[in-house]
Length: 553
Image (cartoon, rainbow, N blue to C red; front, side, top):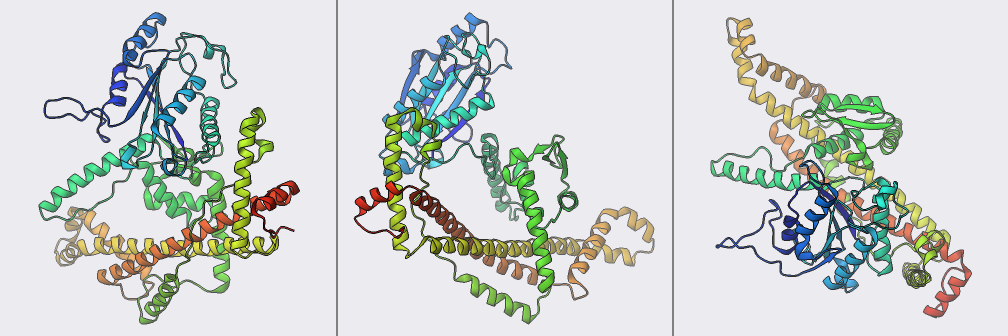
């Protein structure tokens, strides 16, 4: 599952990039690790090559090129581009990928996709954050040194001329990702679809902001604990993650776009707007909107409108059957029913994921149409996947295509039910958290309210303590609304209910994840079976390979 990252740098010191590739650096500060004498440590294993330059004089040669073409002379210009190809950690064990092989692939990739540029290609085998995955760094000078042949991804004539800068357009970015996928497929490495947008998009900048913020928060909390204080926050949250969490919560309840906007504003002080069909969100501490595209596909118009429709249909169905139990009902009857629900959910669905993958469609594979050798390799890989599909069908006792379709339909329904059950528990837990918040707010200002009742000059006292009294009155009003005429629950009762719901939520989330993976696996099997049934010669090849009669007759 190789991925491609891109970082643009305005640093005029090209030697810093070379030092980063050769010497060990701290992951958080990106500064070199020094010994007692101030010397840097070499990386334990690395492979370094230069393209159109000597790797150890990359700094001087890039500055000479910039001076010759009178480019990169101001501080705000992009001086270099840093691309990182990270391979799947499983490639080392499953496919025998080594650092030397990855370096060879990286050099070929850089020569093919960054022609005319001075480039450093360096492979590390240590992996980021202790993952141990092999990854290739490609650092290029933003100014092209030599003329090149025009390529399909180039938009302008200057994109192939010397002296012009590297232009990363959307078409070029898609082309680079497709080349990474083709490289992995042609070498039999694990790979996912890089052209499909992520459901939750975490940029490199946000990822490091999260890690640095969490580190600073942990240090701050450690100081508080030494003083005998309890930290209020233990998990650092970026502004984008705040938006994601708020949208996830509100979207699970809203039945229309108008209700969605109102809940975001009332509960989280987030401003929502729609501009030319694009959803955008304004964080309370920001002045610039963040588009749903930057947050992920789960926060864009198409997905959210579908969620609103599902919520509306579910609410109509629930109204036709029965109403939900109030969250503040802590009678013995509700506790007993909750325990029964927990017992039922405890028997979670056990699923062991296989290594089945989708068969590649040769008719729509451009690489296979261009290369006969690659097409032959894909055919062999497809034959292997088809044989595994047949074995899967036989092992699970599917006697016909109808049995397989029925199993997929049942798995899809069970996955949907598990998702709805988890959503219901999430809503209950969020409501409990709100009650805990307002109960604490109510108790904290209760004494001030009693002093206000006893004061002789109530008007002056109210003006002096307007903020505390307003919080007390608003929290009491909200708690009474949730209690629905019953006695307000104590903080202990609320925390016990929260503990129970948290345990139930964990079990239900595991249940949902297992059923969703099983549904995806069955969809892969069904897709492969359809291909087998539509190609009789494939059935004959599978029959000769396995020497067993399959169920696809």
